[in-house]
Length: 446
Image (cartoon, rainbow, N blue to C red; front, top):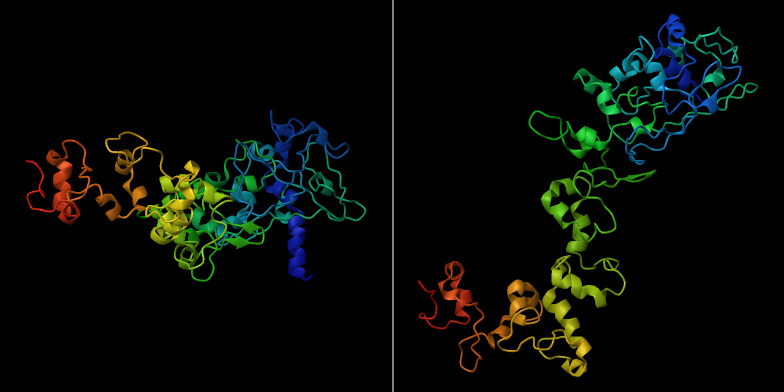
């Protein structure tokens, strides 16, 4: 291992001592604070964690990650899991008289322009208050003074071997310049929360900002920071958001735009896509959509098992839109004809004596019928459903003034004097000419 890398690991290993040092006031304040009296109700201070002969006090419990006070979990893909085998309490230090600010311990944050930068306080910073001596790893200090022993902060320290458990804080898969935000007057607590008020012990991923926090400023409005996804998220070739990482696949949570990529999103994504196509295009290239929407080979796993027996429910509701993938006049009518559910009579010999295979209920086309269960009622409600099987000529055999027709009017009572009649006639009179043959017929009542 080269020297710079070895030095970096030493600094990470002494994270706890570094964080304690600059977070504490001068030694005289330790006497005033009564170190043995932790803040009331502090969730990170547990009596079982007292170290006999090491502290005359209680110390924070070592944790892998602190849940945070009421904060939702962050994305494990953006912020991979951490391991921090340390004893430390932010709230304990921040509530001391004369406690320093965030930048006093995390001084390098004011210069950082990348999320790759290591902003953890160093051992040298800890030495301002802690009398650390590597030659005396079990060094004793006077009553009320900041501890200097290695195992005061490092969980699992082995005195004989002089080794500590390594701190593992993976690099976040994100772009973020601390310096730019600090120069614009943004407070640390705006993104990380008030660690003292929230009673935070060891700060972990739970104290990192969520997307909702970022979008409160990055909303794309005039004079505001950019709302483009790649402002913060890493990009692949072509400027698309990188979605595949060693720790998993990055997917929208749905909390901002209702676009959670759950099991049902594949069949119900049209609303999100139509509301903002550019948002979808930040991750998906055009071929991704075309493979399903215009591809010759459709995905075989789109519909669940036994969908042939259940598809009528979705077809009547048109959710999802069947015509997105299927050609109604070929795909649907071909199958219906083979099954005996056909308007042209093909295959009717299979279904003529089997009521279970009849598509429409008895009395569906009887003259003078009304209400649900009659084709007139259903046709007015959703004529597109009828057109999925029946062509116009099928309807005209009854609903026309031609000789030999039953002459049944498809219009409701009072139609000729309605505004709807005049609007349709003005928009497209050719539709009316399909049934009304003479100029005298082709008019609405005044």
